Image (cartoon, rainbow, N blue to C red):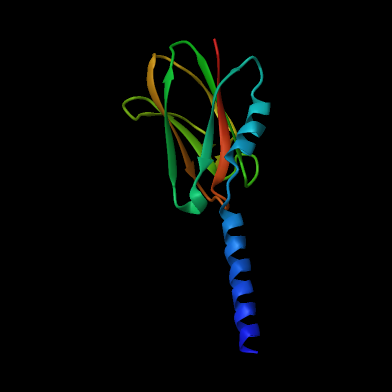
Length: 144
């Protein structure tokens, strides 16, 4: 009887442990591929981005990009929650001045288009707002 209780406890422990690990898995590549399919209208793919908040442990994920003057850049995101729900993409210039964001008027947008005014280094930050999964992917494209 004691061995049965130990076995049941061990089995329950394994079931709870694996369900927690599955809940925190993030297949960013899947969501980047979904975003890539939405990149159209003459935009050329540059890069994909993994947006994995590690189940809420990472609040911000930041990438550095080099943009060129007079070029249109488009970011498109897909979250695990639904479309771009829960993820905010914000673009900053080298002085950390905010230039574009995907969260406006309390609404999530799947991305934005930015026309670059000066060649240089830019920062692309993905953050989470009201997210249930902390998981997604994004792509960046350009058009001249």
